[in-house]
Length: 181
Length: 181
Image (cartoon, rainbow over all chains, first blue to last red; front, top):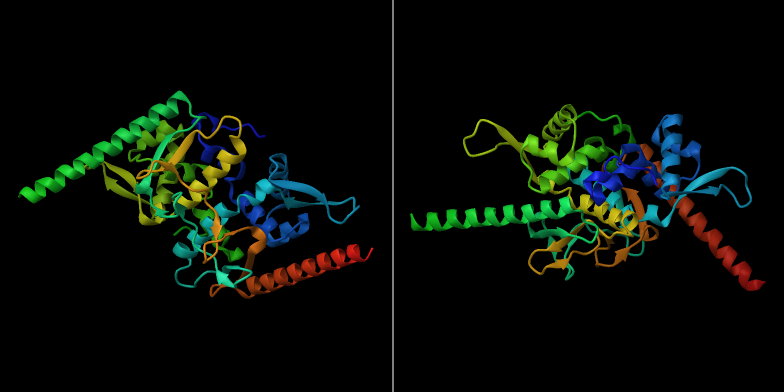
């Protein structure tokens, strides 16, 4: 595991970004998901410099996101394929892709459509769902300390909750003032 | 809109990463989602250098992900808040966060738990869903050219589909050979 400069943030997002929060890393993972195994094909499809590609592939292998595998059974030369851990990044990658479709390709429409193979129907937008299957927005969420929270994170989240309650209270007061006027 | 060195890839993921595919950009967005408005608070909570923070805030504002707003009504000093476009990155951010919870914090448990405020229950894992609500894996997906596809993307996806069919055929042959032996 790479040591992380962000570890002090006590945050899973920061730790994830330390490993894959780099444009090339994400695009290499997408390329592997597209079925690319060989160094030369990664290079050709991404137009990436050899030295950058070498470094990124190393880091992804060291962190068990890609696996080194023989290009053919018994072959000496090796290629790369996604591990379970790598495949598990797919929801995040598709969510970022869909964001780009919505906000950066409004005029032309998406370059690539993701279908369910069985039905040939477009997959759903990636959204935040409650345990009962309702779509949630930022305002429906409450953040609480988990078992891995540091003292600092606990204090931060308590402050966040106090701010939220104060904001809600202020809003209520404004509404009741408007009603009285 | 920033000009993108990745535009030639004809890929919404690449275009999105051009804007937010940087560790600090994503962490600034998360910080804004946590309710941080002021430059000093971003700096304190993220431990980021002033010049890097300034550049990143500028880029995020230029790309309509953050909005510049007065810190109080009528105040001259400005702060930052997420635009609709910014909030729309939340599913991707939570998906990356959950990946970190699963694969980098197995021992300690997650630092932060995301609950639905109404029910106090943990939100669902962010997954890929079909239009009929079934969870999909990488193998259930089929990629086809969208309206924004270039000639090159169309060829690429056709090749991908041929490769997939060949692999499936090879697998079938192997299985039927095993049965005969």
